[in-house]
Image 1: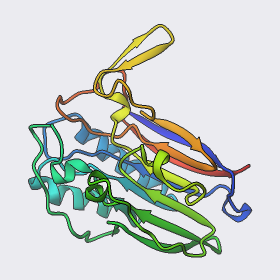
Image 2: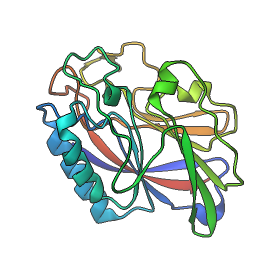
Image 3: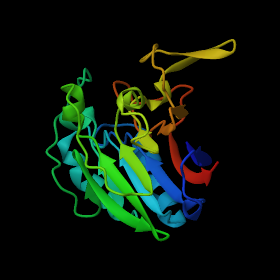
Image 4: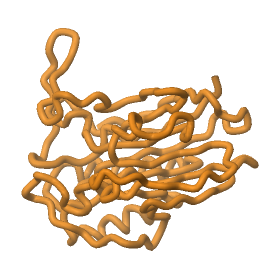
Length: 242
């Protein structure tokens, strides 16, 4: 797996927040046999050791209910994580191995289900909002108040959020879902994502009208318990002014 530190430039970032560090983890898929379990454990230990300013986790945490205590124990190691759920957490998937999970609270951290919080970092206000995947899949709009925040971050499991959010509403979107393709066939100067051949935002950093999005490659797996040319990754984003 890859433990990556990545600088991300934001058009409207306040100078006081230059260098702010955000750990972004996604797609644990705990509860089914997979090498991804070890990747999740390594990622959590790495983040706990580095102690970033913010920790964000963007969904698909559980594939089976019996792994809930394992998840809670892992989250306990992290500096106050902000968490959203994904479609697999509700077994809204074609994956025959997923089972729905009733995760309505966290013993450690903040679960954001069409809700938001505002925290202070370096004397500036940071809004953290999270999309409930059920709202997204029902094609409804998650409505958030607009606090007077200096940095506005949206956690949404689905990368297509970049195409649907109002222009200028968010400075940074954090997403996951696609596992960097999970099973990928390189060819020539490109690669074919077998599970999501038409995905526009498989992994990496993208921008639209002043909003920057980071799509995590994730850590776990679905359908088959391995990856091919799609390394799992834990990412620390270092925010930079332009």
